[in-house]
Length: 436
Image: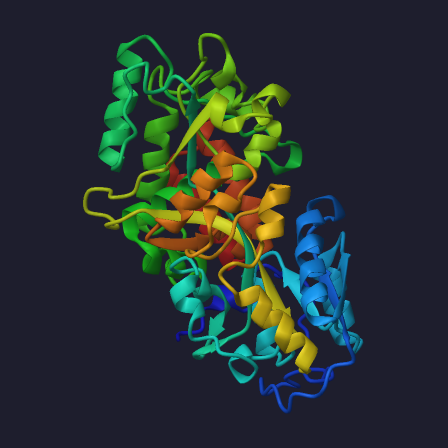
């Protein structure tokens, strides 16, 4: 497989590179897992999943311990990127680490510190059981370095419960979505709620929209080339994607509060008009985490208070199918012993995470997971949408160099939405910042 530059540490841009340090059982610079040793009956895991979100994870690990007798300790990190680098540099890597993005996985893989799972377990079935495209992010030179254990889906459109009763039909193509906008406006209602205000992080909501559009207009291979900067940011196709987003946010009566209003509307408050007695909008595009910002009575019965559908693909002349933009956590091994191998195989099972599904806030990366195990009917519906997707790609801005993905991409999109710059001017400025 082609090794993409964004998979070689784009997330960790600006941080010191890690050199191969020969952690016990690690690659030591040659990415050879070596001999599998006998385990001592215990495993240490470090991850970025906060303690409050790790209840389901710990429940799943408890089941593993009950089945195998192997004790597993999960330690959450508040600064995972720094801590894992420090531990690896200090020859103190955990047995397994749970990475929130693939970029750093591949940075450490380049320096020879992660273990190729092909040498430890049968990874052939992962491609068949995982959501299409998900494994691409942890494969380098035809070797696999991570097992997905959790995903999130960004390509979701939330609607009021009475959406269909109001005469609206779920769109299956981008063209149908655009026609739906016109239908909603013709009825004197507002198609979209959209809010981007997030303090110093204002702008990420807009970049998500652009990434969604690039993925649909140009397809996953072009998307990958753009994210790794093989395609310049001011390529005409990227400018076109920004302009396509502009067609949505600037269209009269299309977005609640207009384009300027989206700059000051807090992203967490922006879906709330969906739940007014007379909805203030009919659609809101946001990841599954947005449910935590819904009113408490809505959260207690999501399926009874809100509907959701996948942001359509099938753009005319674009990618044929429905792509999904999202994020996820990857389990990566640093120690080669029988205990670690057994746990990594446990993570790779299609039914892994039943306990996590019951605790809420989790989506399985497997297309074979039994969705009836989700405690919330709505998450079962979202999981089905994810399983039906044609391909999965990680959030592009998270994988770009920090000065771009969390810098100029955000700020220049703010300037574009605010009318200060054209799509071309914004793209030119982002490209200049990438080149340095």
